[in-house]
Length: 224
Image: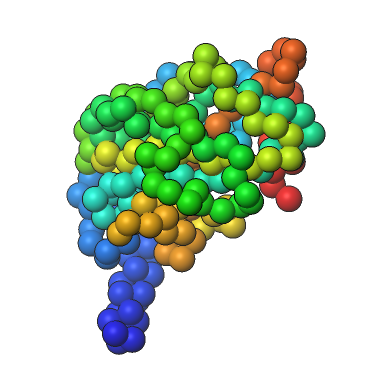
């Protein structure tokens, strides 16, 4: 077993170094050249992207049947005010998702993954990726308007969000932000495999007017 783990680790490192697409079981994922596309994202008071900047372009990718069926991350609202979620953004490719396409959990006990699978989410909905081909490099963001769902994140609390990866999901090299994939019946940390999944969420403060200036001043509070 130890020998097998070492061999798999060497293969993973070599594949990342060569730019190949590798999933958690160590197999290559065939892709086609991508066209960067997607609708213009909305302007809001606050934005959080696991890549470190708004609309971060993925540098890696993982398949739904190899890396993980769902991609999620947990965030703390340490802005000092309540957040009203307005938009989710995911660089992904694949066919239209079913009922549970995007998911949000609220009131988590810390920077951890939810206790249950995606079907335990407090809020959920369907969406269609802007790139329907599951073999296309997932650099195109799909933006999902959730402003009418009324998801409120009180100051000082934790929430988790993510999506159903029906084809390929955008990732980057591990950057210190923990993300998880549903892999072999559990939320498996991507950091153990040298990756961070790219997920984005936007929100407004109660009674505020959305500006880009507020966006960048607030996003810094989540990168300490």
